[in-house]
Length: 71
Image (cartoon, rainbow, N blue to C red; front, side):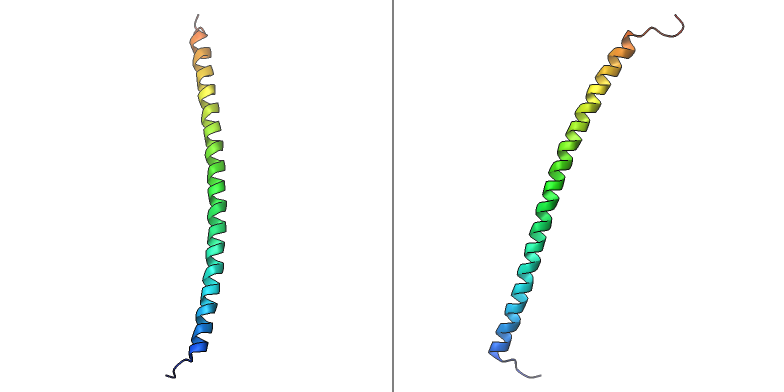
């Protein structure tokens, strides 16, 4: 095995670093996009839960006021 010149080794390390920097930037963008999606989905889920609760409350009062069909 031949010894790598210090300048070649430095170039290899710089290239690796550049690739790692690009990968880290891509991961950061992906993470931010996922956080935004999760926040949006959480807000949507909370609105849906509120809608369901409101519908359930309306159903209970309507059913309680109805007379059974045999009357």
